[in-house]
Each structure stands twice: as structure tokens, then as C-alpha cells.
Length: 176
Ligand SMILES: [Zn+2]
Image (cartoon, rainbow, N blue to C red; front, side, top):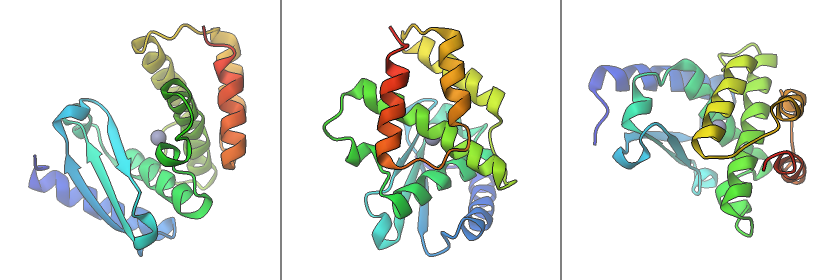
């Protein structure tokens, strides 16, 4: 499936600027639409060290996919490149639940760092809301106050892989 031309032009324009600002201008980004993703976005950075990254967007995620989202995905790419933080590969031995929780942890790190850099980002409250909706959709019950407390502390933290997993375990302990 193809992304409509005008939307594609806009995404490429934003991504070129974002790549420059984040020091990723050597990476070749390929954007495509993937029906099965629904409202999700998937980044494949297995070839990031060869300079290639694929960003697949679900049809329902395409319309709102804008500046904030491009910067968000590119920050994940930066983490994969500079800190080997590719949770799809690095968390191979972990359960799907832990992978999902680790991705929540990383999202707070990523958006908070963009916030500190004064670059386009999803705000803290919006991210908290997205996370709450996401967890309820997955059927995960949480202690709301504890969850928010842990997540707020992660905002903008420059986490290493070990710390991502530690935080994910802490978060998992307040989920039931
Ligand atoms: Zn993310």
C-alpha cells in the first residue's frame, strides 16, 4: 500500500529536517503503509548500522502522523544506533508483555528528551493518556497513581538498555 503523494512529500520534508537535527542524516528512511498495523507504527531498524530504516504506518495512524510522530520514531532510531537499544532484537529472551512494557518506558524517555531539546514532541500528559488507553485496550489493569508516578520519573531520562529493563520490571510490578 502506498502513502498518498502529498502526505508522503510532507513526511519526507519533516524527516529530512528531523534527521539533520538528530544527527541521523546518513540514514535512508523508507516510509510505507501497512494495513495490518491498524493504528500502530512499526520501525524496523535491523539494518540501521548499514544506514537503512523502514518505518511502517498503519492506515489509522497515517492521518495523524505528523511532526511529533516523525521525531518520536527517529529518536528510537537514534537509540538503536547509539545505544543498541532495539527492543525487538535485544529483548529476545523477554516475554511479549515485557517487550510492551519496555516500549512504554522508552516512549517516556524519547518524548521527554525531545521536550528537553525543544524539538517537536508528544507532551507528557498526552503520552500519559495514550499509555492509559493503550493499557486498557490490552486489558492490563494498573494501579493508576503508582503507574503515573513511575512514568513521570522516566520523562526525558537517557536510559541504557539495563535501565530500561529495570524500569519495565518496576512498572510490571504495579500492573495486575
Ligand atoms: Zn515509541
